[in-house]
Image (cartoon, rainbow, N blue to C red; front, side, top):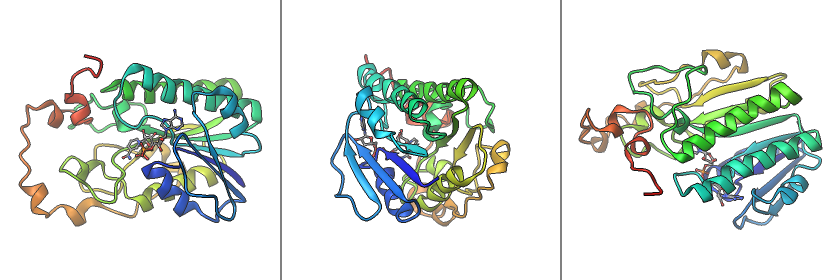
Length: 264
Ligand SMILES: NC(=O)c1ccc[n+]([C@@H]2O[C@H](COP(=O)([O-])OP(=O)(O)OC[C@H]3O[C@@H](n4cnc5c(N)ncnc54)[C@H](O)[C@@H]3O)[C@@H](O)[C@H]2O)c1
């Protein structure tokens, strides 16, 4: 895979991956609605809206793989989610199909399964239980990926990212944390593997508290190296008050599951 498109390149994880994947492919084409730093060696930047089918068609030209991070990354109105995540992801798959791009790495989310309770250990076959319109849009992306695989053979690794930040910010994230290095190694494996089919993998580091079972994606050979254990003794987590009857504590999606409907 020598030519790789990275959408969402101006976002938090886009910047992380731009940095960590630098120099590893012949071309890293970076795209976002927002402004990006100027292209360096082996890079191109293209500013466009994922909702613009014509622009996305151009974006995928000559690419071997697409890392699709772009979109609305938290809950929002249906109109915003519709354009950025639903239409945007459809445009990405159509562009992949028409340009002969064989593989997509899709940034899905734990919020696609956020209404499962925390005591349940989920694997890749757990039913979708989105906790928000945002989570619904990620479920849509995963199902779209399945359709494009079954009909057209386009492969996808959908990464149900937990919480990918420099450090966990609250007690829930001690379970859901995905370090930046582990994110990058997972994306690299998803691109390098000979075959991936249509696979769901949970994006979490090797944390002591584990809600997710990645055995069905074991063929990828991805081993997270980091762990939230190094943060667990921090008093800010120990002293955090967690009421077990609070939906934010009961459900895996945390605050997204507890929040009201965004449109109300
Ligand atoms: N950070 C996490 O912990 C986490 C967890 C679960 C899933 N994810 C997913 O990973 C991806 C990256 O997350 P992030 O934290 O970097 O989010 P982010 O919000 O920082 O980045 C998303 C980027 O997408 C761009 N974008 C939004 N709408 C667009 C549109 N219509 N056209 C083109 N670009 C558009 C934004 O400008 C932004 O730069 C997202 O898809 C998010 O849903 C992230």
